[in-house]
Image (tube, rainbow, N blue to C red; front, side, top):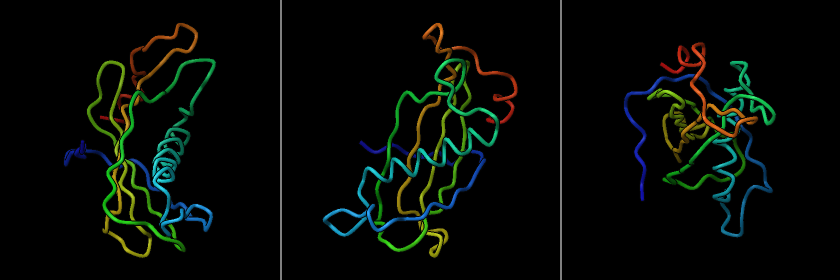
Amino acid sequence: MRFVVPAQKKLTYEARIPMRWGDMDAMGHINNTLYFRYLEIARVDWLTSIGAPPNPGGQGPVIVNAFCNFYRQLKCPGEVLAKHYVSDPGRTSFETWITLERVDEPGVVYAEGGATTLWFDARTDKAIALPDWVRELVT
């Protein structure tokens, strides 16, 4: 199944992530699990930059799904440019989308992925309404 990143989305963050030699697998390209790590780095760095890092004992963001579409093989050496976008705020959640490019090949998307981010209260183990300040940032 292929998920489609929507045209209507808001760019919120960019991260440069070095590809390490040890990230490659036996096929000579970056292992598919690392693409998910790159998506996570961009998402968590953005959340931290807005003052909403994951909060295991309180209220904050969690993801309820994740996907990645692989288009080209990333190979070392180099840096990944992860562009983070948001869209579709709901009562308790919003969508995050991330494209992965090589820094030395701007505009060439190697992979894209995303996740539904849910606002969550760890004490009650339930979803809660997005805080107004978060809703403002993702609208």
